[in-house]
Image 1: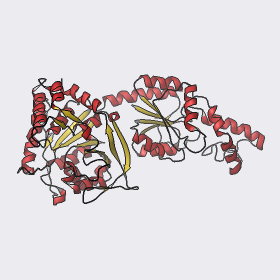
Image 2: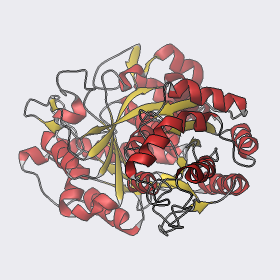
Image 3: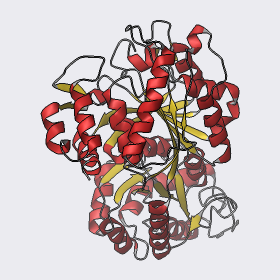
Image 4: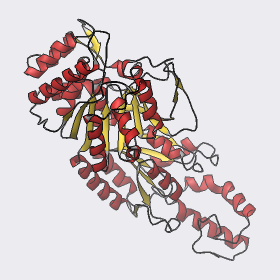
Length: 479
């Protein structure tokens, strides 16, 4: 698990120190003491100081206060235990707010002084409630520990789990999941980790599997990872090449290809495999089909269902058009288009049904895009490596080697990209991927992206760890 931790009031005794210093200064100022025991915050009405008096005292002394903070009880000990348990520790602090001369240096020295270990420090602006959310999304933070009501609520609204450290200033907000000490935090994370390890994710694979060889690898990878996934359905996505094979014929071949691989891997495909759209929305296709109906049925019955889409996204778009409320029940991970560095998205999955892409993008469903060129294209592999790891291991492995060498579309090739495994790998371990949150782009008629600033957010993958992905793939397929 990747854990984000705020410093002030989460690792340090910031509020206690501040209150002690304010009481000391109050005696020097007017000696009226605390006039409000339950203010919104210490700096907002606890004392009878004017706003100018409070601002002047705070800004003149905050840097010195920060240097002299003490760590909360057992914080160093339990953060070390979390690290030794295999978690990654990200210190995410709001000290980049103009109040410190050199916040990075100050923070590093304080952490080192009290033996607080970490993998990375990230500084944000504490006065921007969304800043930590952006950082957590960009760094795939699984859990954030913070003390701010506003920041905690913003993190939660974007699906990030939060433990909010109890302080006297956040008692009014009863909806937060609060913690009081580091022993409690450690014990809860340990239980949470065990629970998540045993909890499978509900998935539907939407695939044009007979199109070329990478889909066969992706389905095999998924079926070999059932410790991670509850495979609810495998749906057939449409595809068409200029080879006199109609979409209906391709659908039929894909359907039987899925069953063949399921049988090899002894996966019970009864009521699991469904034929989908036989044309594209951009051509006016709006018909009922088994795949779309099954996507809706499964999404409605689960709290969350992940759609792993590795072909044209027509089935997913039709499901969202038919049941718009599914945006709260689904998350889509799609291999399609290219990175923002490319001038267009004339890529097979994208260009087949641009209107379907628009429908999914505009639906506001939670969406992660894995671009092809500049990202998934890094998953290039040779037949020599494939045969080294897979040949002779099983009938399925030999078949995958054959399909890799000659996929039926591009002729014999000694090197090719196995694009579609990226989506499965992303769901297995997001730490193998670098992502960023962006404003959802508009899609022009020529397939290019039009960047925006104020649309809803989507996640875009910018890089992936090829070695980690192929190591996992070969280990699973080779047994």
